[in-house]
Figure 1 (cartoon, rainbow, N blue to C red):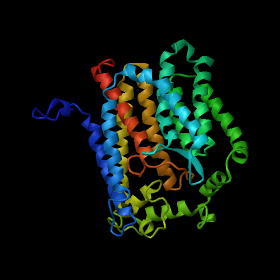
Figure 2 (cartoon, rainbow, N blue to C red):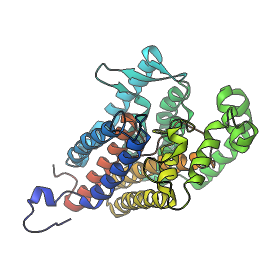
Figure 3 (cartoon, rainbow, N blue to C red):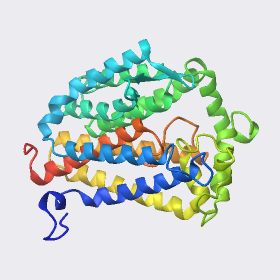
Figure 4 (cartoon, one colour):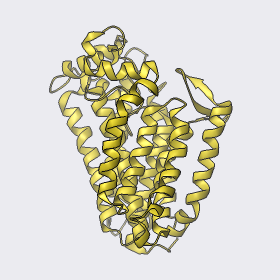
Length: 374
């Protein structure tokens, strides 16, 4: 994107068409986190300042990733998959427990959630797998069984943490790549029918009690408004009370009076909607539409199988975050621990989504300049 003759070339060549809307969304999210602070009147601490620092550090990382040639991504696919898989094993052996789940590794300088990193890595490794698979074998068992194994192992480790929401996110990105790789549609229809038959058995035998309760409460949250249905009830109250224009910056009662749980993470959209109203919600949706449209444009315009699958899978991963979080806070899906990208507070989530953005930037650069140029 050319910005003018007086702008240094390295600056002008940056993908400002996505950096500017993304930065605007992050700064808007920081304003929401500033207002949601437990300090009366709002404060940069404890969330807004860290949120911005995370973004700008990871944006620098994404811009560095954008310089990597395509071959580097291919070479890194299986080693990164193995490294994250080992991290998931370490979580089971010595992971930090929080909120009843064992999901984090304490690295001293930071707390890392390896399952978050598996979301982009599973997309990368499956894109690499199908790129190396002869097209004639894609529609055979050789195109399904190895890919299913690559997906099933990390998904199983994440489910037993337990973290069903992240496991579903990992599966979603992987299934999108598998579908776009060209596997027969009848296999997906058969898998869907099998899942529908197995769902009642899984519901009663595999899910934890709190997970089953989340599903039943989702169907009728008013049945237990002060118990299991409290989160979604308060979220819908916050969103509805904001109206079209909102109550005004730092004037939200649901978050400031501590009625709305997780107002800075999973339910940050409800916090925003109460203060900024439907206009704020439309702005957030518009920016996400720009990001997702850009990602799919990169995928469609790419000239090789690996880049197409990689870009589409990364875009699908961001889409899953956005869709499930927004459906959750509006009562259209059960409550799961999935934050809103670039708005919710959380370092692991920001890292994951910026890895997706950096990969898409790299894919766009490969198309424009050639995949082997560093």
